[in-house]
Length: 384
Image 1: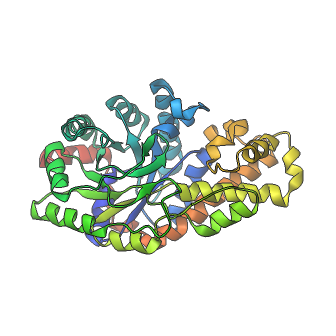
Image 2: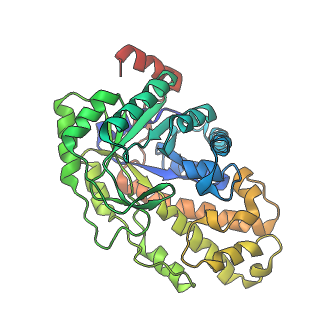
């Protein structure tokens, strides 16, 4: 069933495990993600970024999608999650990742999202507070969870870019929770967006610990989020490069560090790059093992678009020729089915080990099966 993200994070916080959150960019990916979460009996947080919403409207220039296109894509993602997850035995939250405006938040809530992030981290502090407070006032009456961000992560991911990091101040985080009423807060503590996080990156767990301790001292019922936390498995990078890819300096966060911070107050861990890498590796292997598919009328263009940019590993940049399959799950022929299956398998392979290692495996029974309507009543009664 679909639940507010807060319900999932409350269980993760209480039982001290990390709940991974995965970005989705196609109908097949969503189907596969829900299936593997069900198999491992884990609650699920599926995410759509603003660029994802534009892409899922059919806009190929998804980095410059209009608000109208993003609204269409948000509903498409919402409808797909409902299709595969409304009757699921596990709790599922659909979350907007890095929303930039109240209008984007409104479109996602209308489209079926049960959680939203408003990212005002690039704004002056008081402006960030005001924007986040405004979103909370709008979202909580719908029972929708709100995540904010404080501090700036370096790196590039969709619309998020910064050359340097600004670490989160734990005392300012407490002030932010108090002034905004947000449910969750993404902090900057050494992680980094994208695939180029740097070799042997060390995250500053003491920032997470101090922030959580300050929150507990002040009686704040909130949750901490780790963005830019893809692990960038080196076998994926090496396998892609062995088949002609040109990925340089692609390194992620060591899983052991993420497992550690999950015990130190980090309740949600965002992962995107791992899925992109796994899907791309699988599709490259398909064309390597079946070279005749390079001339396929239905998927030959997928190969040509992929080969034209060996440094790119984002499937959104080479699947324009099979958009009916991406957007609606319409499979034109067996060749298209093979590409879609590669993407589904990539989702499964990249997600499964993280659910086990972060600790959400077999814990869906710990999560309260609450609806957004019930959460809205709770917000009202408790003044959260």
